[in-house]
Amino acid sequence: MTLIVGVRYLFVSGAFALATERRHPGLYRGLSPQMRREIGWSLASAAIYGVPAGVLAWGWAHRGWTRVYTDIHAYPLWWWPVSALLCLFAHDTWFYWTHRWMHRPMPFRIAHAVHHASRPPTAWAAMSFHPWEALTGAVVIPALVLIVPLHWTALACVLTIMTVMGVTNHMGWEMFPRGMVEGRAGNWLITASHHQRHHQQYRCNYGLYFRVWDRLCGTDSGLGRFDRQETRSP
Image (cartoon, rainbow, N blue to C red; front, top):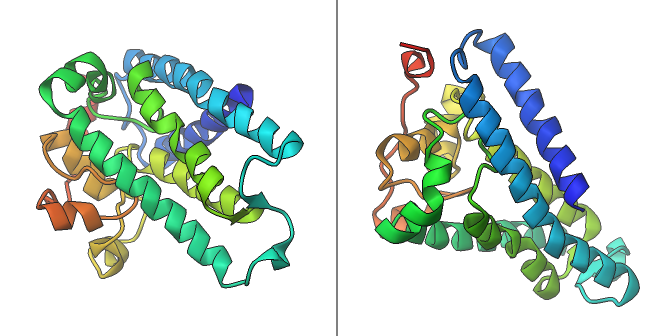
């Protein structure tokens, strides 16, 4: 599972890094040392993510530990999207509160500063975490599959969204159309424009998928802007 998580990271982040170079040539110019650090921390995080994932995968196959099911008719079909959304919201809730806690002085200094050392973040920064922070993220999906009945394709959908949004929210440009980002959907969904402001101001925009908790808790600071000059060498 560590190998799978690591290869998945390299493939997805690499694909979006390549797309960035084609869409915005030179955007990552001068950031090679930073990107190497991001890859190193991310592969270490992949090792940590792989341990509970591997244990639960073995337990599902041999002991029936999880609530993951393979028969699509085991639950009503309406449960498929509900279960996926429930997991995304639960993950978002966990992420918001742990992320906000990570911005307290001591946890930030000990762990979260590793992630914010990416200035600006790149497509390689999605899993660039200190091991202590990686542990807080590694337990979420394994815990959810023990509690929430999920068809395996719904779980695959959740993991895909988690992976893609983790990368695209850090790549330094907005891939979604302005009409969506600044429209009704963008009022509730987090994209690169929203997360960019977090990396600029730190004390705001803590969510992962949705802006719900940021709005409820008064930490939503709106959309950020992308200054390409920040990504170039002086």
